[in-house]
View 1 (tube, rainbow, N blue to C red):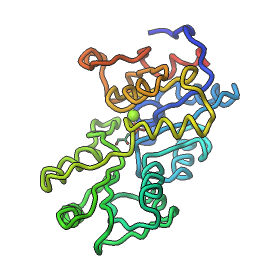
View 2 (view 1 turned 30 degrees about the vertical axis):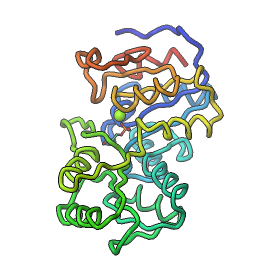
View 3 (view 1 turned 60 degrees about the vertical axis):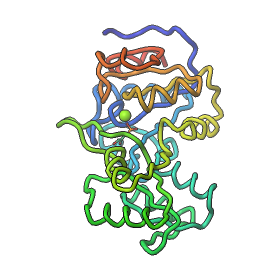
Length: 262
Ligand SMILES: O=C(CO)COP(=O)(O)O
Ligand SMILES: [Mg+2]
């Protein structure tokens, strides 16, 4: 598919990260030019990722390593959204966390105590090394009354080698064992879109959301009233689009096709 022409005025941009800009640290071809054009244009943008592994600064450095210049403050993660949610709900609470520094740092920063002794919550995030011992602990704490929160419902993440099991798949394992469903804070939870729109003072009618997953990025963008753009460099394949009861505003092969829309 060639480059698409502008059909609608887009003043602000929200973009997913994994499967749109990078695959596990490797850039998607054209993503560097897309980000460069976006920065030079002065248009407001945020990268919205369900990946809860890294902190904003970690991600900014990782993206820079892939040739993408995205400032830390332009990145919003499901880990930060989860910490904000818990701080709103129960300030100064406690949690047993399965996850990486992106999540533990965010929770510490809002004043949470991380413990496996009678925590208010079990918080499941993303990691590449899920531990059976930790999952067992989480199951027993939930059985004992801890509330179950998960950063993101994605069952898999994209990588150049193939699918990676993600938070949603591990949450399903814990749900099967306990009968308890988690509350997911990441996309498609509208909290992710709303906080980004508020922060950049953008209007939904003139904002686009780019994503590679119909069931997280596109549905939440659609529900928030944004112009939604599905790219085919990540999880959702072209033949799967029609299976969903909602459609993206636009489908393109990759972000490289969007450079001329900025
Ligand atoms: O990491 C993810 C699932 O494993 C999803 O990240 P994105 O929201 O950036 O695609
Ligand atoms: Mg993605």
